[in-house]
Each structure stands twice: as C-alpha cells, then as structure tokens.
Image (cartoon, rainbow, N blue to C red; front, side, top):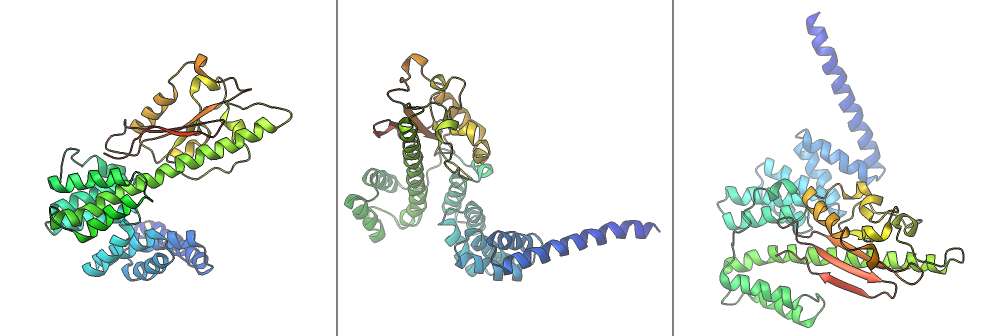
Length: 336
C-alpha cells in the first residue's frame, strides 16, 4: 500500500511530462517556432542529447540562436568538443549570452585564461547579469599596443559606415606588429561588445523619432492642437515592444500627473534590467525643474536613456529630440 502511495504521484508526473512533450512535438511539426524552442529546451533539460542536437541544429539553421547554444552544449556533453565549440561560437557571435558562458568555461578548462575571461565578459554584456559579479573590473588582457589599437577603432568607428572604420578593421585582419597574436585573437571579442552597443544606440534614435511622429500627430489634431508630456497619450495606438534597452519619455517635472516615461508605461518590458541601472535612469529623468519645461502649445523635449555598460551601470547613454526633429546625443555611454 505504501509503495502504491509513492508510485502513483510519480506515474502521474511522468504522464504529464509525456503529454507536454507530445503537445510540443505537435506544435513544432506545425512550424510553431515557440513550440520548437520549448521542445528543444525540454530535450536539453532531460538530457536527451541526440534529440537536442537534431532539433537545435534545425533551429540554428533558421537563425533561432538558442538552438545553436543547446546543440553546442549537447555536443560538449557527448565529448564532441570541436562540433560543440563551432556552434557555441556561432551563437556567442550573435550575442547569445549562455553560449558565451559555455565557451568561457571551456576555455578555462583548456587553460586559456584570457580568452575565458573575455567570453565571460561578453556573456555579462549580452545580458547574463550573474556573470558580471564575478568579473574583475580592472583586469586587462590586451597588451598596451592592443589597448591603443582598440581605442583607435572606437574613435574611427564612431561612424560605423565611415571609410576610416573600414580601414581600421582591415588593419586588424592583417594582424601586423606591434599587435601580438593574442591581441588579434582577443580584439574581435571586444569589438563585438562595442558594435553591439552601437547597434543598441539605433534603438534610442528609432524610439525618439517614433515619439516625434506621434507628437506631430497630436499637434495636427484639431481637437488638441498641442503636444503632450503624457507618454500614455502620445504613444496611444503605437505598438509596444516586448523588450526595451532605452527608457524614453519626458522629464518628470514636465509630465505632472501624467505618465512620464516608458518605464512606467511598459514596465514588463524592462524586467531584464538590473536595479542599479534603473535607479540611475530614474534619477536622470527626475532632473530639472518645471520652469525648464516647454509650453506644450509650442514645443517639447523628449529623452532616451540607457545603461550600456553593466560593469558601470551609473554610466548613462543619453539622447534628446525636440519638436523640430533635432536629435542630439547629450552623453556618450558606450562601454569603456
């Protein structure tokens, strides 16, 4: 009797798992990528390495990057390091943090401490917050020449489409002295962090231009004939995003009782951000006085603020736009 009491819940649990797997299989067979992602996660968590590899690689080919990670980690579990490292590198280069963490662990086991540190750093910058706590902020793994070269690339690539940027990147590919061979191996990882942050800055420009278009629509409305400092009013009818890196909106003194920022309006879209970054951003939007605000009949100022450097969350990247569409970067917060 006691044995039956123990076994029955176990059988029920196994039945539930089987039903879940069958349901996910059916959804994935119908080309539902979300079901496929859940199914590959299920296979990985239940140590079904062969199934994980087959489905993970299929998702990877469709540019579902988490599939590359799961397949790569499954290869490692089967002691197939070469195949695993190839897939994990592909995923890490597309900003998938768990793949970078796995590569960091792999390089640490191989005794490549500098490369291991860089992969852990990339995982941190790509969103794996718990990794950040283990990183030494002051550790330098490039030579002096490598650090100088990195600084020149960041300067030349302030405009990523410039010929100076292309020339500097081409020089890296040649890997000539005074750069060491290790510098040339490590520099692409640092540049991945830099160019990802540059790409994120495009989000600030996009959100502010979207806000500008919405404000102009309000101004042309014959019933209103004015701009607004209530973001909920401004963004009405504009689809929200699942995830934001920048908080955008108006200074709190200008909004009064209205909704000042996207952090208030789309709270769930900022759950990935750490508390220190959010604290710094809230503080930034609290600056100023009501006397500094525009008359809504004539104009407005809106801002987009983000922390792009998880090792220095107080360092903010700040952009501003006004009713004339003048877009200005007030503070450069690219990773140090």
